[in-house]
Length: 260
Ligand SMILES: [Zn+2]
Image 1: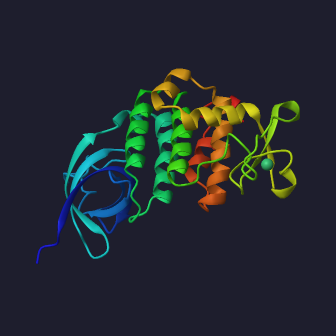
Image 2: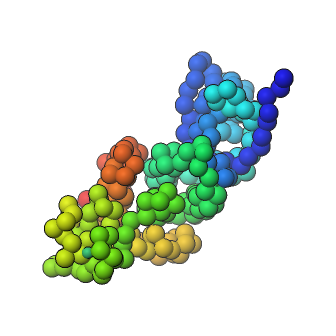
Image 3: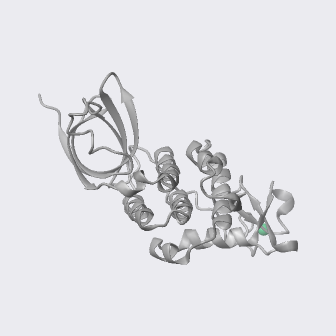
């Protein structure tokens, strides 16, 4: 009996080699659920899949359900995202976006808004300048955390819900473990680190603004990278992993000295 087939729109998050010429693609489907499928012969240059299953691509797929992994039968490019892959800076910014999606999505967990937000984010990345690319990544990473139920508390104290005020020298107390700001009354109850009020301001902006606004605002790289470090701490604490591609973004040297 033929296996049941299904069609879906998806973003390619990861490509893993399988055997001599096959590929496993990890996908964010338009339902927001993660799917993994085998594209047979995809690494042969003559394969129809070779140019259609590139990283960060948005594709329409026809798949058949397999016992373990599904099988890709047909693939059609909807958005190639070529400019993201062809620029080092844009590719560096896109990689942690895909990595966090891969780590937080699950086959059985649907969240269509996550797909829509990610599609818009990769489109915004195509529009961004080289130095503006990390801001799109920072915004998408924060929004992905929020869609995954890990929205950081940036408005009030994460422990008591009261106001979390700026302290001496423009610093605020932030707890990675609790997942947000901590007020001066609760600071003894949580392990906190100092984070500048300016960084918190940029994180609020990235979390709450549409990508079109973020493209226009041109956030400074220093502020953007401070937010990215905040994200890395939250991911380590709540997703249980370091995003290797984010570490690479910190150490790549492409964005100059003002990111330290
Ligand atoms: Zn408090």
